[in-house]
Image (tube, rainbow, N blue to C red; front, side, top):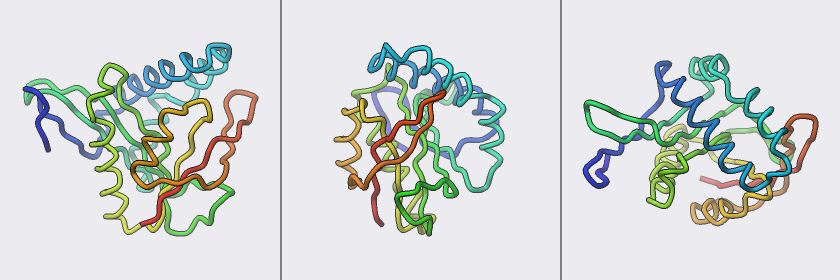
Length: 183
């Protein structure tokens, strides 16, 4: 736990009550990032968000023992807001690497209004600690090639390019950049 300004920042495992806030944050962050980067793809992005970030799926994920959500909360003891989260899935695979003893950082979002405060680094540190606690030997993630700014962020935390990962959005399959980190 750390303090930022007069508000407390707390990172912890999510629970079912967090599901609505996670969905709202995920939709907002994804739309804000990718519609800005690929406005010509707007309709595809909006359809993807409507299908991928649902309350029912998030609740199913939260009850799955192979999936962990870490949420970043900011606020006081009277009122807290989820301003970031990461989704870890140790059953998600990619064709480029062997599925043994690894986990996927499937989602990693900081609310756009809270970026540039060092909060992404704090959340990533917590994610890496959780992966080490689970005794995983490798973490992987994929990045849409147009989201160049996050490649440097992940590199700072020891991730390296390791090929491509297929990502389906609507009726199109892209080859995202695959990055891995060994432990």
